[in-house]
Image 1: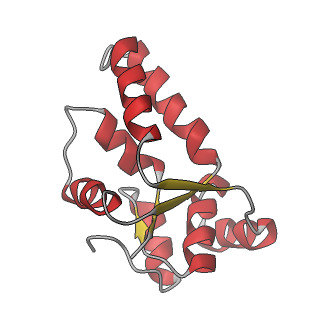
Image 2: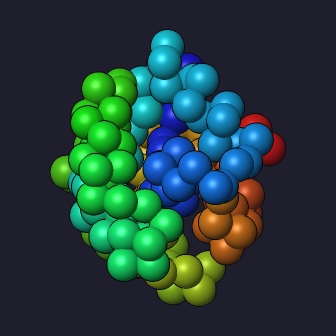
Length: 134
């Protein structure tokens, strides 16, 4: 079954010093199932990578390798969020609009959400969205 992937999961994949059961499950699942994410994932992942280069947690070479790896996954970026619904979710749950975009996609597509973000996970559960590995 497809699922919605958020940037916290991708960050865990990119940073070898991080390990989480949900991220490992998502990586296994994306090998056979398609993952969806809002288009902003493209920007978020690259920002995470560049910030961690500055912190010397990864090298530019590791960034390039990870982006190549990510490009080969069964990941579909959604460019058509329902803006008013995402805004409402952000307001109701006190989460960022970015996080609300992942939640809106999971709700719209009726898919489980893979996230390591606690606030987003709480909002998802409040909205009846299944959490991958949860």
